[in-house]
Length: 314
Image (tube, rainbow, N blue to C red; front, side, top):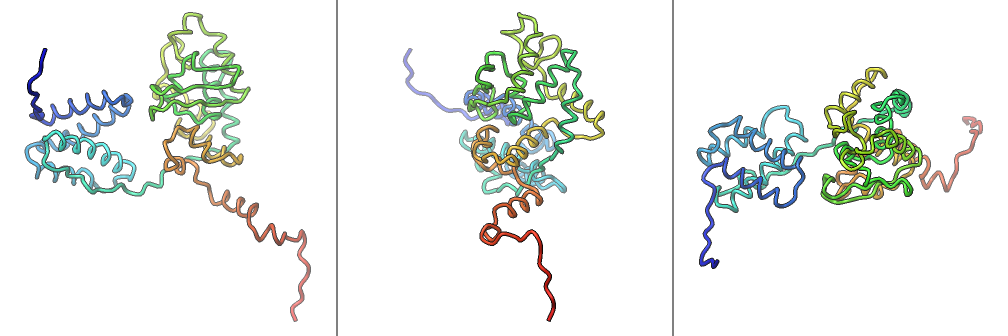
């Protein structure tokens, strides 16, 4: 077969454009969650503003109103901006739009919300799972993995037995399972490895190849809703409240407080650069004060006296 000429035809509608855009993103090996985020954010715009696709002027007006809503959080604003701008940029390249209505828009400063959990609460949390049951044994091992590695929940739920090396105390997050599409090796402590070994020892043999390490009683993968319900149950018993992702925050903060290296933390968390890591590892005022007392040049050059001598006023 011989091709003589290939012409490029722009999508006729925004629905068609979104379909082609999503297919293009899938071809670029983006994660399922990222694909879902693109679809959700673009569809949300046209659901709220059904007439937005009728003209560029209406689209621009709709987009500005969508991003200019009152009391919108910086994180929400930034997500909308990133996903919509990327879609519109593709539309410009394909000839669907003449211009990108979000060209030149900048992200808002997002300080992020770091949830801190007291070590005593974490200690009490680890005492709650009933390890005489499969679900309790699984929860205990999973809690240790979160607190030992800072792994993302979705990445943890996808781990298979082949991703676990009990001799080297390692967990491998393959590229196709990682949010950033970059594989990484997570090191865990012997206590965590022991909990995983105990969990695997009670599983049916046939689960080895088909069921994730942390699965339901039926051998099906866990999801954020199921795990969220388990964490909520434990929080009620503790008289507190936090989101499952807070365990990732807890790992990050405690890792730094244990004098862990920030660049090593970046690698463990799976961040492509230090920008996101800094949001997780911001230190509290008490931490800064402690670090200052420990590292201040003045304190090293001129150590404090244990007792202050009496000074008489002349």
